[in-house]
Length: 136
Image (cartoon, rainbow, N blue to C red; front, side, top):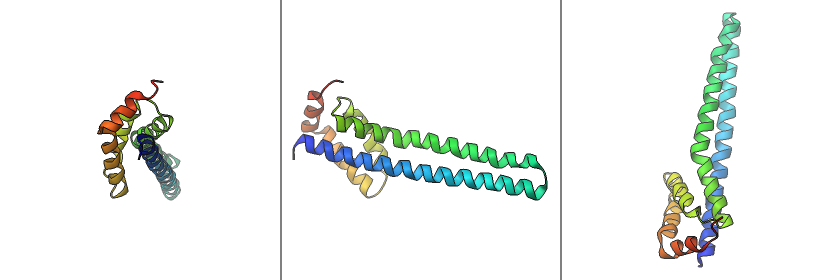
């Protein structure tokens, strides 16, 4: 296989993981916010104190912030690596190594993609490919 094909396959793999991460975190965020708000509303109606709904809203806000931070840490680098590799940018190799580290713990597909990506990024063929692409 040529370096262009290796680059394309790894970029598609990172894009798939970014999409899976993104949709999973979006779903978990919506469910968590819904549960916290529902708990706050039911707690306020049981006690008769409307101020108790703030606990549920506060839990919803914290879960929203948690999933946004988690998405920024896991989805953004993987998506950036995929896009930069697909476009053939010079810094795609750096982002690719970061994305490979992030998907490595996800057995078995993430680990296989990380090993394949690191093999390509650190091989002579991969170094030459990324040193010869556009610097934009």
